Each structure stands twice: as C-alpha cells, then as structure tokens.
Length: 336
Image 1 (cartoon, helix red, strand yellow):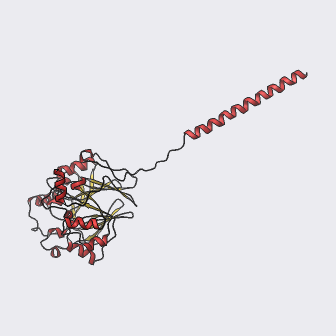
Image 2 (tube, helix red, strand yellow):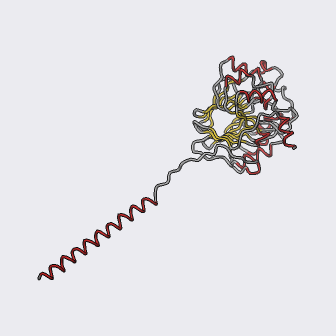
Image 3 (cartoon, helix red, strand yellow):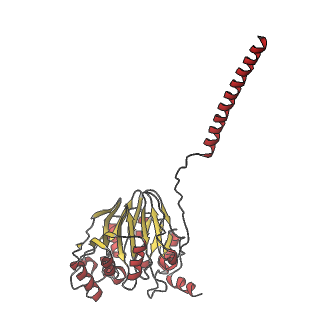
C-alpha cells in the first residue's frame, strides 16, 4: 500500500510540474511577442532642406498632413506661384507667354485638375502673359485683377486673354483694400491696391498686394509694387509681421524700401527672376539690404523652382537658400 501511495504522489507531482512548465512557456512566449511586436507610431519626418533640380521635379512636395504648399515656379523673368490647401489649388500670377508651356507642364505634374481662382497682380506680360495657356488647360472659377481702363493695355496678348476670359465666362473681380477670400484654410487679404489715378502711368503700381495667412504663418505677396504702394500700406498701417516676403519687382531697387522691410520683419524672402535678365535683377542694393536684415533668400535664378511646405506653425523648403549676389554676379558664375 505504501508503494502505491508513493506512485500516486509521484504522478501528482509530475502533473503539477508539466502544468507549471506549460504555463511558464506560454508566459515567456507572450513576453517575447510583446517585445518584438511593439505598435508603430507615424512620426512625421520633415526634411528641412534638400537639393532638387527641375528635371528631378515629379511632384516632390513633402507630404505633411494639414499642410499648405506654395510653389515658386521657375518661369524665367516673371512671377508664378501655385498654392495648394486642403486639396484645392490657386495661383498668384502665371509667368510669361514664353514660359507658359513649362508652367502648364508643372501644374500637370502636380496633378492640378482645377483652379479655384487666379490672381493677376497687374497687367504685365511677365505676370499675366502665361494666363491664357493656363485657363485653356485648367478650369478656373474666378480671376482677380486690378481695374484699369480698356485702353490702358493694348498689347495683343492682353486683348486675346480678355477675349478668352469673356468667352469662357470666367468671373472677374477687381480687388479692393481689405477684400478677403479663402483657399481651404488659407486666407488671402488685400493690403495694398492703388487706383489707376493714384498709380498714374506706372503699371507696376497697379499691383495688388496680398497678406496670406495660414495658422500662425504669414506671407506677403507684392507683385511688382514699388515704393509708392509700400508707403500706402505703411500709412494705412496694413503691415503684418510675416515669415515670408515675396520681394517686390524681382528684387529691383524700385521696391522693398527699408521702412517696408523693417515693418514686415520677414525671416525668408522669395525672388523670382531669370538668369542673366536684361534688367540685372535682383539689384545689389536690395540684396545688400536683405543680407543686412538677415533675411534668408530663395531665388529662382539660383535655386530653380522652390516648394514651401507650411503647417500652422512651421515652414520648410525643398532646397537650400541662395546667396546675396546680384543678378549679374549669379549669371557670371553660371558661365564659369
């Protein structure tokens, strides 16, 4: 009997041992699984600066949820800016007639299907010359442009453009001070607009000046507005502190007076100009002033097209900033 009891005790011990062993295997297996299968969190990685060329441009926009994108499109000696916010698109200026095909190609690469609106800052070819091709290839609801007398601009390209706008029944609005409108969450507000009487014969001074805000980020786009317009904005106290200034008139010394630059206090400057342009933009005095104020400059004659990715509290650029050389120096450096 004693022997049978010992056997039963041993079998009971064996069962407990294997149960404990089995539970231990399950427990340690669970710990191992946890250590090797941690949940993955999406942490956005923003590249502050990278070097890209126009040939490499294939919708290289940095994808950041909730961001606005601003494209300064290299259109030679002209201005052309594409905005994208909440899946909607708009433009400020459309480049020149000679760069129109390149602008249309750029928009196609960005998969633009429709433009909510286009701003023509003023009636010069280097800002509105490419608009005919743009509206011929992309649907557009509204065009904002300064009001001028019918006989002010008699160039064939402009007359053809106005005929096209009328034929396509595109709504035209003449901006007025304090007018505002939206592209997604981006707000565009007119802070500078001289009347034709005030501007006189200087078409540059017809330029509509916009304050664009997105979250805490502020931008000022000036077209070719010269010092006279800048002083109106100062007098009317329409000056916002801004992170980015589109430097007036391609960096000409007729714009960006010291008082205007001091009041805006931008961290970054955008200059759209052609390599070796006959106007020698940007000018030495303007570049020296931007350097003195420590404004980081992005310029198409040196950087090519530049893409800004804007969140509510930050701005990143697709390329490194340019230097503070004038247009002649940059053109000469290209020849070396």
